[in-house]
Length: 172
Image (cartoon, rainbow, N blue to C red):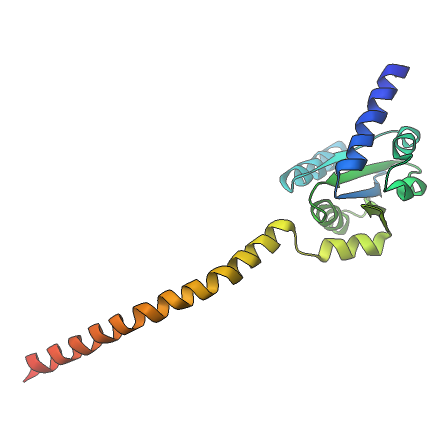
């Protein structure tokens, strides 16, 4: 890799560190190519990405960034998982680490906040952006549903009463 390629990688990593809601660092020693492709696919489905980069270049890219604290985690065979959604990458990495003992989550960063492995688990336990939006929409929609039910109820009660009267009239 020549100097120009290294500068390009450092620039790309810098953009990743600045724009991501969460960055998770893990050791991936022993993962097969198929397992790594599976991890990448799961991360892509969740709206995140996985990147393997030289630790030295990643440390250079971290200089001056809010999440520079993760530089200490960059030793050995590390993989970076990141997403704009502050929860997605942590959820996928935590779930994959449970299924595959070869992936060891070292920690990460959420903005300026450094995360240890327990912190990554805590973030993974939080609801995602989509889940929060769905619950808010559900809360907003519930009163409207109740109003519609209350308005429709008298009409159904009247229809029920008329049906009962009609049945009595036929029986007599």
